[in-house]
Amino acid sequence: MGILSSLATPLRFALFIGLAAVVVVDDAIARDENSSLPGDEVVGLLEKMHAVNYGKPTAIPPVDYDVLIIRGVYVIDGTGAPPYGPVDISIEDGEIKALQTAELGAGIPMAIEAVGNDKHVVREIQAQGKYVMPGLIDAHVHTDVPLHSLFGPVPSIDFVFKSWLAHGITTVRDVGSLGGLSSTLQYKELSEKNEIAAPRFVVMAMFPIGRFSSPKEARQWVVDVKKRGADGVKFVGGDKLQVKAAIEEVVAQNMTSAFHHPQLNVMDVNALQSAQWGNTSIEHWYGLPEAMFVDRQLQNYSYDYNYSDEQDRFGEAGDLWAQSSQPGSAGWNSLIDKLLATGVTLDPTFSIYEANRDREAVSSRPWYQEYVFPAINRMFQPNSRIHGSYFFDWTTADEVKWKRNFTLWMQFVNDFKNRGGRVTVGSDAGFIYNLNGFGYVRGLEMLQEAGFHPLEVVRAATLNGAELLNMDDDVGTIKIGKKADLLVLDENPLPNFKLLYGTGHMRLNLETGEVKRVRALRYTIKDGIVYDSRKLLRDIRTMVRELKDKDGEIQPGAQ
Image 1: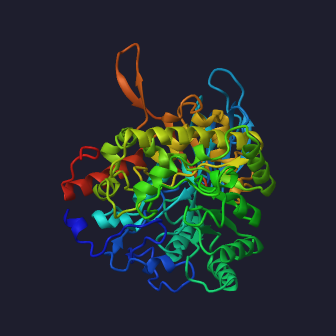
Image 2: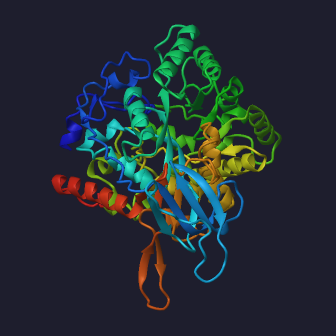
Image 3: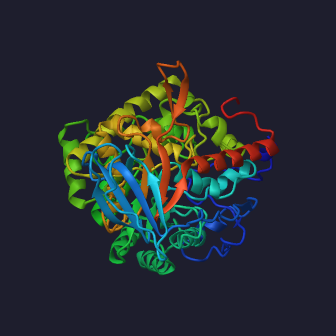
């Protein structure tokens, strides 16, 4: 209670955008506290919040080889094609140089000769019978979430980076740069140089609402953030004419955009309208049901609805899909046709909303014991002043509505995919019981629940993500000449994505009677640099344990 009572003013936000602190870190990342810089407007909005020290990111592991060879693996290439192999993969200068089929037979003879000399030091990973797939792409992340610091000390930024890498995520799209564009661009630069152990970054600036007096000023802001290095712009509503002008400028600048269509603005701009203006991806699902209303123009709000009361906001959103056109109807099919014509991508972020259909189950996942630090655990508890902590009186009726909501939402996403639409995987972790890495893997499972074949799930997580980010020439599939962003797995993940969780999958050994947790991911490779996922997970657990020891926190889920 002491932490909460120290807040001088209520923090009851309608949207989570703009939540930031003055952030300080050691050496490698210097924060520019001048919030007047384009893209850094977010930094000054909560200046009374205490500073956050994210620490200096860890350097990459030692690289004592010039050539990396992975022996005898079966390849899931990310295109949707079935696995093939066994194959030897040769990597040099961070790129895939050769893919050569190894002959079947005892010992699997070497297809690629490893000849070391004065110029080359070769490392071999003996992975006979194991699997390789492309590095995963999380299309919706928030690297910095300064809100966590309201509830106590936060771990080093390594907690986030290692959570991603430990779950095979080698590329992330930061939608909005909640810690400010300056800091996120520095993460990107250091990652590109492989000076820190982190995925590669695509960085989006948050479009500031209420800052501009004209569409011309909105356009100029887009030009300015592009000059600073932003890859794209995240929209969460705003003045209709300014948003339209900004999206058009994003297209003119050869950037990309992402749009969360909040109820406060969806009457002006729904998902179809923004896509027709040139928006690149629709985040979550807001704006889709509203784009195919047939017997109404707006959501059936209760008369005492308050958008800033998040139980109202999220509770009543559970009825939205039921109020709209139904599967197979003319309105349903027409919207899919119109969206396909624009080329827009759906980035549904299923896992961030899963607690709405079963809060108790989501808040007691196996990873909560060892991977949730005290501050974020406190933030996850019901709190009317904090975004995403809205389970004040979440009832059976609320969960039933959301289960129905998910059924319709998932069917729309699956129908969109079946008609040729691009769907990606984003986690939006850091809120609503959703953790980096773990929440992403849960998103894979939920795409399969929606009707995707596991190979379609992998394609969404790899090639589709790369296409969305205009990076498919470099990443997203396993192909000669592409960057060596690869996962080495002890087992085939297609029958069971639970094998990708940091906590693994519970399995009974029928011969010994022993119950064990098994994991598939052994190594995450980014730019040819090998990261041991088991070591990364140990590092994360150590960070959490140290914070718990200092805090005296009881186990998550026990409150």
